[in-house]
Length: 206
Image: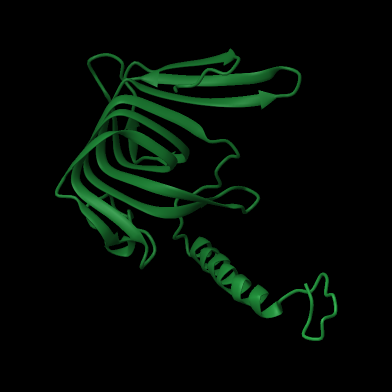
């Protein structure tokens, strides 16, 4: 690269360009910090450094809301999530798994299953802070693109920050649910036929 006089220039920083790129990033970080201090973020606790997987043959729920937010870990790192909030939910054949890698021992898997019989898992005021979700979903009276701060159909407190994208519906049904998450909160969580196993090796729900 040469300057206006034809001399070679190396290592020069465009401070105007640097400022143009840095200011929005700093503003975003500051906004997230303010939101964190005001308790406007997703989980009400510091999340662990491990995500877990959840699967179910079928989930049905009344009062559905979904919006973007951020979790925080014990180090203060901010982790973007999609919050799925449901007033009352039922899950058939629930599986939850998390894999921990330990020195010398290797991978250790914790697996939980419930709702595999006639009685499904039931949850009220359910909040899931997810990074991935898939399945076959259907909704009734869905509103897509609603301001996250104005959501009304989900549980109490199921609202995001103003001007952020969100959606809500009267009810939701998801077949073959597959989800990866940082955290789950619920007012009540009833697990029929609960079974928990710890085993060596990597054994996940999906």
